[in-house]
Length: 342
Image (cartoon, rainbow, N blue to C red; front, side):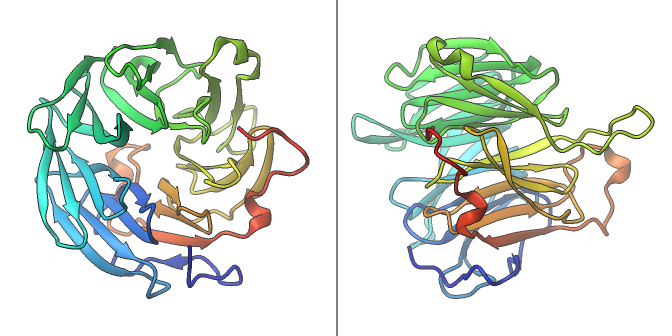
């Protein structure tokens, strides 16, 4: 995929970004088009092919903060989910929009997948359900009850993982989408902030508010490979360690290595198979709220904004708010040594 960005350039701020915290980022699989879901109730699409700082291409407004976004396979249609209890689709070529989902409570997560050569979407809500939607129909194709409110969700191939309140993780094989294949509690001790599936769909990564990540394999025979590690923490001072929420985990599409972004304003690239850190970014001055690699892994986008991890009193108009674009160098994300890719 052609890109105007070159490794020698520093990180670039996206022009004309949202006016409130970024909730989710997603790149089109067909071009360097970036979807930005924001608490300002808008889902914006930026074209990065003509300008290093991006150009606004399309926009859809909701009646409440937009909490998630996802591209469909064709790369020309994008869906967003909102606090207004709806999900809507935007065609970036025509500007046409349509409502494609509804729940009884805010829709926290949205993902797309294929079943029998038909593209569908799945939505996860604070109403404690996930719903499957055929875009040709107005009613859900199916509804599945979850253990608790849905906080995060991801899909890769036939693997769907739903993270809910009370640290529950529910795994679904999309060949049997209405059946919960496995329900486990997170190996992490505190609230789950993010879940992200491995590229090969053999497992998933989770991040929590305690400055810790976990890696879980779906098949029990691989359970010996499960592990957790500490990250996004300050060095101990007088036997006290300040920990920060892990808000974003993204897997590199080529190498299978991954990034973490936290409330401490730092980003890191890691290799899960060798259990090593590949790169540590300098602090960016504000919490990392979302991240995404483009389709060929040459651009890494991340959102900076207040994540409410310290409560209402720490939010102020001077808090940094931006979307940054990092030109990825190969040695930042390439695994070190001979390791098995997952």
